[in-house]
Image (cartoon, rainbow, N blue to C red; front, side, top):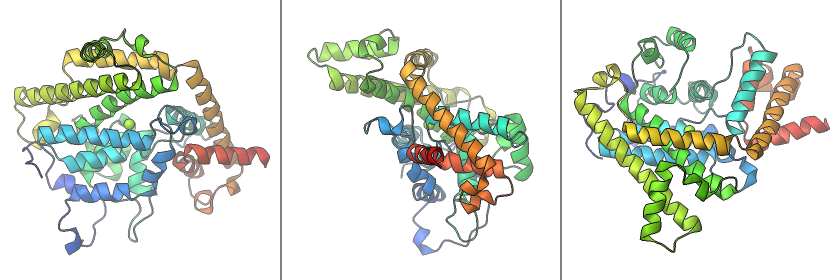
Length: 381
Ligand code: MG
C-alpha cells in the first residue's frame, strides 16, 4: 500500500458506520474499513444489476456499448490511478466509484426523469426521484444481506462520496435523521473529502471519453466531425502524424487513450498545485477550502466543449431521443399500473407503508430488460 498524505481520508469519524457491528474477527484483520466497503458493494444485488442498465445506449442495442457496470469499472480505474499519484486512499475511491451509480433507473437519465415526473404527478407529496439519493438509499436501506441491519452499513466516507449532490431541503431532512452525518457537509456548505471530489471528476472524464467511443461505434457520430473540438483535434493530429496509416478503431483508441492520459496528468498537476497554494495539510483543511480536485482552466474549457458537443450531437440525436421517449413511456406506464393495482407488485413492495416510494424503489431497481419484460406483461394482461 502506498503512503497516504495527511490530507487523505483517515479520521475515525469517516470510518464510522450507522449500525454498530460485532468485531469482525481475525478474517478481517487484513482488510481496511474501505476495503470492506468495496467488498460489500461488489457482492450486493444492485451492483450485479448494473450489467443490464443503460449508460447512453439501451442495453439490448449492442453487446459492446458501455453499461453502468463497465462505466463504473472505468471510473474506478481512473480514480485509483489518480488517487495513488496524489497519496489518497485508493480503496475509498474504488468503493465510491463502484457504488456511485447503484441508484440509477433502467434506461439511463431518461428513466430517471420519467420516474421523477411520475412520482411528482401521480403521487404528489411523496417527493421526487434523484439517482444520487437513490444510490445512498440502496446502500443504506434497500439491500437485504445482513441479519442485523438493512442496507450495507458502509462507512460515512463512502456514503458521503456517493451523495455528490443534494438539495438544501433534502440535506436538512438527512441531517435531522443523522446529525453530523452524510449531509452534514451540505448544511455546513463545505466540500467533501478529496477522494469524493476525485471520483466525481473521474466520472466526467470516463463518460466523456467512452461516449465518444460508443457514439462512433453506433454510427451516430463521425470521427471527422469530432475534429472541430480542440481537444480531439490535438490528439487526432498527433496520432496521425506518428502513425500516418492508422485509421478506424485503432486510430480512435489511440486518440482516446492519449486524451484520457492527458486529463489524468492535468488533474494530478492542478490538484497538487491547489493543495499547495491553499496550504492544505489536513482532512479538515480540505473541507473548508474551495474544491481542490480540478482540471486546469484550459483543460476544463476544452472538456466543457466536448460535453456540450456530445450533448448536441449524441445525447440529443433523434435516434437516441426516440428510443429514450419510448423508454420513458414504459417507466411512466409501469408506475401508473402499480399505483392503481398494487397487487401487481411483489408483496414486500405492495405492503410497504409508503406505496409510491416502494414503487419507485421497485422500478429503479429494474434492469432495462426486466423493465421491458414487465411492461410487455402489462400489455398482454
Ligand atoms: Mg457515473
